[in-house]
Image (cartoon, rainbow, N blue to C red):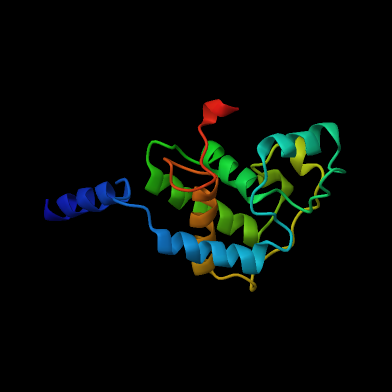
Length: 160
């Protein structure tokens, strides 16, 4: 009975919402992004410009090498898990990003086909990025696109 009670408390804590935004983890993740991801991924671009680039200009307007951070952010939150439990969704997103970075495969992509068709599959980052760095960069990416007015890139979904 005591073990069951402890298990219930442990599971409850996994599904709790974060008390406050961890700005330090976000900043650390941004540094990881800048140092390990920005060679191919732009951090953020106006979504209307991105859509024009991919839909009307066949990526010839911006000549991007990979999806932008804010595209990935939006897709992580809209396609991985449920937004009803931020902490658990963030955990699922981290698992997804780790798997994708270590074992990239186009069939796993969360990006739209109209976007991803312009890019080659990224090389594996195994041995180039640690699990801790993946956790930090996923935290950064998750909140980059905005969530509950957390940062400058926040926008309401109904703005689209």
